Image 1 (cartoon, one colour):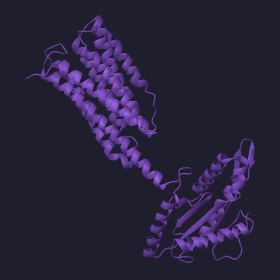
Image 2 (cartoon, helix red, strand yellow; image 1 turned 90 degrees about the vertical axis):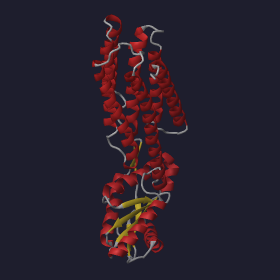
Image 3 (spheres, one colour; image 1 turned 180 degrees about the horizontal axis):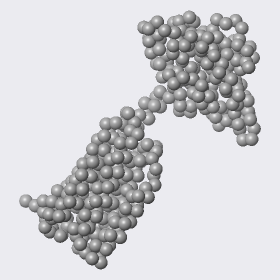
Image 4 (cartoon, one colour; image 1 turned 135 degrees about the horizontal axis):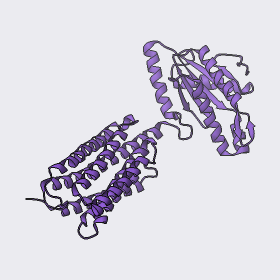
Length: 391
């Protein structure tokens, strides 16, 4: 029993339209989506192109051949654009649009001026195959670790349809009929393949979107939204791991607590946006000064904690003093005005000043208060009677 190609095309366009609508509705439920919104729009454009092909014999060949096939290829260019968005890739695609325009010109020639069915199939299938290969390669670039499975699945779909489309182009050599809508196993298989492709690829893109959203949730649960450093809960987790590791290996580590001096005064005078910039500047300076495996966390409103594994007190004091000096030197520029910005800090070392978070924090906090009482813009170590002079 042979399936009717026109019916299969209508089924495929309904599938594309439905998946496009679902994708757009999914995107509409999220405040910030990556690929799914653009992919949904591409699927609706694909459905429009499939409709043009389904109306072959009802509308002029220029529409059902040149316009319809070019629209399908254009939909794949849009789909590729959507796949670039999650990693911040270029959204413009000159190659894709030039390929689409060139295909349209050639299809006009071989459908109106010098009609040739086999050349049209070869041209359209080749263009689609190139775009599917580009999509597969795009899905291999800079894949987030937490999204590997979804990217690999969607990439496999793209490679599969690229290979099958290339085979479709080659099949024009042995194809007997020159009528796209004539019954035949080859045509029926092709239309069924593209229906499966749109379904599998859309599910893959949705999976990509979901894994990115899961990653965002995990990130927001661990990191401070303003500064990007560990929030208090995540910092405490890392502190606990470091205590266990240091006890097991007989190592020391140090904790430094920094407080931005006169932060309320800065907020009151210049506004909260300036205060936010000041907090970000503190974090930027700390990150530029510390080692890669040191950990920074936002402990409170304008307080930051620095965990320095395998670091004794004297080294920790030097690191904290370097951070203090860099922040003092950098200041903060608000408009044309340079605003002075300083921090005070307290340093405590495990196990000398405490064996757990509470005791070590008390030691570091007491040192911080001593730095504040001594005039701010200085670092004090737990157990030290005389504050380190600011320089």
